[in-house]
Structure formats: structure tokens, C-alpha cells
Length: 498
Length: 103
Image (cartoon, rainbow over all chains, first blue to last red):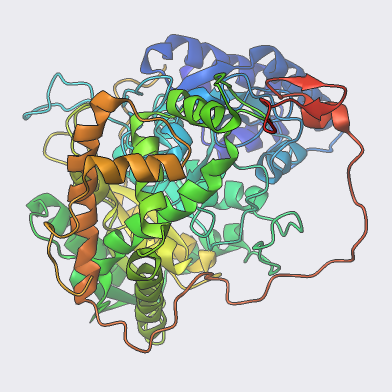
């Protein structure tokens, strides 16, 4: 059994093609792994019967030589993706009982490629959070534990908002996991759980059927065990979709080829920028030194690393915390107790709206709706919302300017390793600061990837981030392949199924 | 916004009540005081944007840089009232039912 669970998706695809395992055996192993690790609260809904049916269908296609890109690969789906006939709640009480009559484009792409659905996975409520603690289903526990230091013996966060997806990946109760990333929700949990996480270019993956948080920032992407799996899964998830007006009609570079090229030939001549402004106050020494080590790894593979400046970086987080709540307050206006979700009766229509929303939303979601409503309200719109949009352009210009000279940027993924559950949830501002390195790529709409690069002195995973210009996911895969080889990160979480 | 004065923009309970009403979202009275503190802290933190010079900068609403695609004005889906209403808290005769709005 442990041999099956230790295979990457690429290895499992090969084993399925070679008939050394069947899709049914693979799916059974993951269903058992999800049973064995249920304490981490990663899954909010299990669809094991459906998984077994899909696995049997995969075995038939494998036998006929009609296997798809992800044929037979068992996948747990973040509860932000609508799944036809399977309850989808965005981990919010207000959507309890919502059964979508349609499938999101991204998950449809996965099923079209032969993937097997294991169930729905916990996340922060409406993906608003950085610790997976705002979920109506309760917090998720990181399968990693601190081997020493002040966090030893404490339950840690897997990060958020794709915390359940990262925890399930680290626990080996899913083989791949699609996430969504509005300000770092794929990359930060991937970093906290020793995984690869990519937020592609805005528009690469269709937003159709993904529960909307902040539409100009939301982007789906893969969370995987390694870089090759990331290239594979990204290839399946990405598509042009006329059902999403901001979908990009441009071909995805051949990411598997980019991976192989970097492995074989290195990245000679690739220019990597090291942004001065990502050295932040209070950054732990081990993160600063890991960043320096990452630079050397890239140079050893032939890259040229140069210091660059992104002068408006410090304004990215405050701009994000105007734009994202503003868009959220507008998007979440649809939860009114009329067309779907929960309803609480009231004396009038307005009273019914207010009671329904008051009862259905959790504290963090309410806080963001209030901030969003405030910054969009009469008298404040120009001072806050338009100001933030102007700052957003300056941040995008910063990236455009440096990408005239470099192919990618190297930064830490997060300002710390995973922290204890409950530690930061009482202070919204310190929770926001988790996203300091990840938010700028969302504001600029450009792709970025987090790669596990080492362990902290406490034995917890740390990630390095690469950021590339629009549409250059291939550059990310190349750089990530080099970082991955050099880091040799082969640690497994103590809470992983075996 | 030009000056970084948190006192000036401190959010009081009447502001909380006003924006909660705009958002059609009930806030428990016992949460109002705590929300004043939380929102004031966040709003004064985001006011650091005031020190960023944005003169002659166009606001950025979309990163894609291209205009929205057009399509032919034809019916591509629809006539599925059962699917549309399948999640309605209350429905009757293929309509969503809401509390009476006309006195």
C-alpha cells in the first residue's frame, strides 16, 4: 500500500499504462488513506462510491488504450469548485445544501482527462483566510509537526485558503489537488505543507463555476507533490473558455517539455531578478539564508542573478485589502436567500436578506463585506477604491519594467513557516501579512510558483517562489525544476498515510 | 486620504450600522464594538496608500489588457426551469418566492 501512495501522479500514470496497478487499486488506496487521516478534517464530503465508478470506467479506457492525461488519478476538489450533483458550499454555512446543476470548467477538464473524484475539500470560507480557520466546517490540521522549538506538540495550520487541499496532499489522501489563489491561497499552503503550488497567469484557467471571491484576482491552479506533476496538472486545468469573459485565448506553453529541457540542459543564460524590496522587517534568518541558497542553486544551473527593484511592493498588501474586499462585497451580494443557499425568514424582503446574511456568513467574511461596502460607499469610493486601482497599475508597471531585463524573479514564498492554529486568527492584520510575498503577482495577473526548498530549524517546510511575466508558465516550470533538483526535498509529513 | 490620521477615520458604531444596512447584513449588537476596533485598525493601515504618489496614473481594473470578447446574440442555453429552481429555498409554479414587497 505505501508503495502506491508514494507514487507521484506522473509515476502513477506510468504504472497504470504499464498495468502494474489498476485505477481501482489506486483509488481504493486513496479512499483508505482518506479514512486513515480523517482527523485532519481535510475532506468536507467524501464521494467514494462515485470514485469507484469513475475508477472502473478509467480501467476500461486504459484497457482500450484510450487513456486521458490524468486517467485514473484520484483527486479531491477544493469546495470552491462547483461539481454537478455534488454539494458545493465554499465552506460557508450560507451555501449549506447547495447542489450545483452544472460543473466548473476546471473540474470538467480534469474529468475529461480521466481523473477520479474523491470528494470535496475544506477551505477558508469563500477562500477568505490564510490559515483555513474561517471554514464553517472547522479548522484543518497540518500533517506536518514541529520536531523541536516553541511549536513542538502544537497543532499547526496548513495555511489557507486552500488549506484542506494542501493538508490532503501532505497526508497523501489525494494525489493531486486543484486550488484557487486570490492573494496566495495556492502558494502559501503549498509552502506550509512541503508541496508545489502554481498560480498561473490570470485567465489561464476558467473561472466559470468557481465560487467567486474577488473576480479580478481569482485564479485556479495546481497543488502537487513535485514540479513534473504541476506541469501535468496545469496542462489539464488550463483552457480557453467562452464562458469566462476574461479567459485567455492563447496556447499554454508545453510545460512537460519545459520541465524536461531544464532537467537535461539546465537554464543557462536565464536571467533571475532578486527584488530588493522583498527583504522585509523581521524576516527570520533561515528564510533569508534559504533565499540566498536558492539564488546559488539557480546560478549553479547557469542562470544569471541580478538585484532588481519593485519600488511599490510595500503598497501591494494595503491595495489588495481594498480591492479584494470591494469585489467580494459585490460578488457576495448574490447570497440573499432567494435563489440558492440558506434562508432565514424576516418581516420584509430587506429583513429576510439581512437575517439570512447575518446568520449565514462567518466573522471574517462579514468583516470583508463591511470593509468592501465601506470603501465603495459614497464619499469614499475615490479615496479608497480608485486610489487602490491606481496603485495596482503602479505595481503592474514595476513588474513590466523589471521583466524588460530579467526572465523571472526569485523570492521567499512566505515570511514564516506554518504557525500554530489559533495564533493569528484573533488579529486580522497579522493574518493579512502572511500574503506579503504572494499578493503582488495576483495584483499584476502574472504567474508564480512555490517550490519546497528546505526545512526550518523546527523541521517545518519552507518554500521559494518564482514569478514570471504573463503567459510564461514554462519559465516557472524550468526554474522550479532546477530548485527542486538542487533542494532534493524528499521529506514526508509525519501525518501522512502509509 | 492625504494624511495618515487614524482618529479622523475611526469607525464608530453608527458607521458600522450604516454599512451593515447598505450590505443588507445583520450584525449582532454585541459584535458592533469589536468591529469598530477591527475595522478602524484595518482602515488606518490601508491609509498608508496616501503616501504613494498616484498623480496622472490611470486606475487599473483589468490586468488582461484586452477588451471583453463579443459573441453573437443567440440563445445558447436555457429553458431549464427545474434546474434553475433546484436550489431555491422556496419556489412555486416555476417562480422564486420572496416575502411580499408591495403593500
